[in-house]
Amino acid sequence: MVEDEYTLVLVKPDGVKTRHIGDIITRIERKGYRIEALKMINATEDELERHYYDKTDKPFWPEILTYMMEGPIVGMVVSGTNVVEAIHNMAGATNPGQAEWGTIRGDFGREWPDGVLRNVIHTSDTVDGAAREIKIWFPEFKF
Ligand SMILES: Nc1ncnc2c1ncn2[C@@H]1O[C@H](COP(=O)(O)OP(=O)(O)OP(=O)(O)O)[C@@H](O)[C@H]1O
Image (cartoon, rainbow, N blue to C red; front, side, top):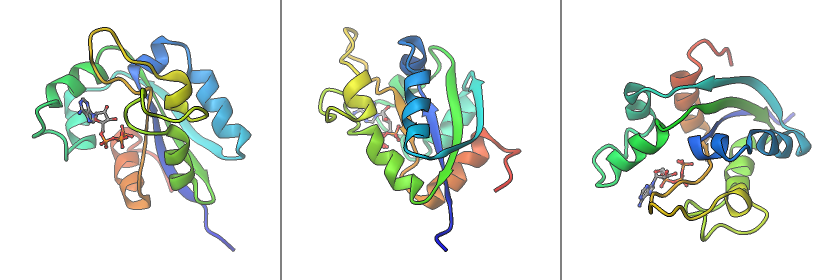
């Protein structure tokens, strides 16, 4: 039997502000994946530094921090067969202007007039990465 995987989804502040929480949950559930945990979060600098540990030395790090703290986010743990790759693909390309139609970023993302790269959603990109990220946002979660 194929083991279920777990992945982390964050609906970022722009996704919450533009009212796409429901659309995103619907897409995940329609594919047959299970929402195992769900909460609204006001991200702290400490959580974001741990989550984006490989981005803190980038020139755009202050932009990510401001973006991710400009409003609440919605965190979810999602499970299912091959869920990590499937949901990462469902999110689409990092830049919403280049993301394919049919992906979450392609359909719900946009270019913002202030030039900040906002892309609606975060999804884990590996099984190990997902386990690390779930521990940051859902420390109480039992796999
Ligand atoms: N050049 C950039 N300018 C501003 N922000 C950026 C840039 N590159 C990446 N980011 C931000 O950092 C996040 C993580 O970058 P990464 O390259 O891991 O993209 P991703 O895997 O598509 O996104 P995520 O990890 O959020 O799912 C991006 O989602 C975006 O919010």
